[in-house]
Length: 116
Image (tube, rainbow, N blue to C red; front, side):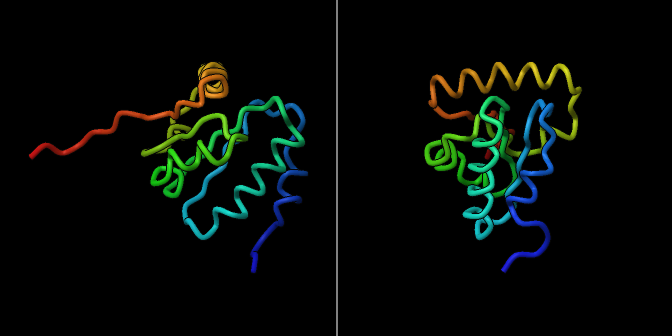
């Protein structure tokens, strides 16, 4: 069961001059459809970087990058995109996407951890 727009309808609404596509997946049960939508985005826009984020992505970073080559980068932890300055972020993500595409070694962000 789906509520709202179908993945195809969402992809149709993406403008051709888009610089970056950000996708969030908060819940793991949504991942199969989100992944299908990401594949549709990549087919329609092969040159636009795709960044995934959300709780599911943060929890399954390695699996996500290994199993979904259409994703160029992952924003994990706190939402990177809410603090963006568009031109600098777009350039940084373009550089990041290039590195991830060519190395596929995974992308890990340093996160504060409690010390005991």
